[in-house]
Image 1 (cartoon, rainbow, N blue to C red):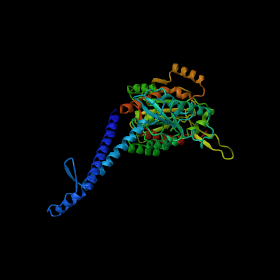
Image 2: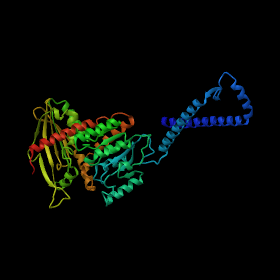
Image 3: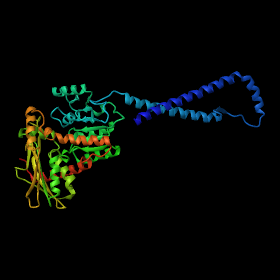
Image 4: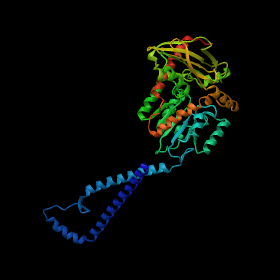
Length: 474
């Protein structure tokens, strides 16, 4: 409302200035005509003036004040420039306000404009699932979707029918669908715009920079954010320079089973917490999984647990005393798999871990363990043990009752990624906290920052080296 009043004031002020200028200029014109008519009389007066000791006044009388012609010309020039500037600024802001409304919820008050960058296919892409949730969030206006692959005819000449149908549905809701951030229509200057970047990890740094250049105020970046520590540090520097806030989508920071385990650990002397993260892929799915998540298991699946270690256990590369790998094949396995789409005589192979398990002891004496298994099922858990190794309490996620409900949903819709349904509440909680914080102009509680992401990525690179030393390819 204040912006609207300011706009009107500047607009009318500029009109008043121009009106005054016109009036003054008309006055000059009238005086000049009068002088022409009285030329003869003035000639006689000029002769008398030459004899006068005092030089004649070269200027004009305005509102009873004598102003020299030079001073008046300078003042008029400055006034015209000021008036034109105010009119131009006013026109730009009015154009921004009266432009085409974009998004599925553009008229609602108390909303943040959100763009999804890197959507992926329906039921397969992380960006897609975020998008589906945003459509139901009253505090969000899903303004646009940027999909660099499926929306680009040069890269994807024959988009899947599911994608074409999805785009048509979004456009019918008023949502822009484009191939590049640069193709987006101008943002609404009266609102904040957040970008949720969920592209492939190696694409994220470029997409991140494009979002900042376009004018996004906040960026929600899917983990791990970038393929390397160096790239993520460059992204942080760019965001700081431009005053853009960045949050990372580490959903384990807010999930109940982790929070419950941390509470028990706080009251257990010398507690040892064991985090187990499972996915429900089958062995036959691993070639596609390795290809899609080419950054590696620790930078992808297990990065959530590494972020927990950084945030709650003060685990950083320079605080580690011991990093012990459980080399039993039941807990850790390193595979080299034929890359889909490559053929003889020039086949390509991908090497990564199907599962890993390790224990970290910090220089301060704290113990924490992590296990991640791509084919371990839908249930993840956290176990708290005492200083003697005895189990104090175990927290599972999802619960047995919730797991049964998820199984029913997966059976009814076998095309959807099961982990979307498993972690759905956490994804929603993260976005609600970020958007509520944007509206309140505060920092969101419990959301990982880019600094946490950098330390987690350092841990991932360190841990990958240690695992490669300890494990051989199967």
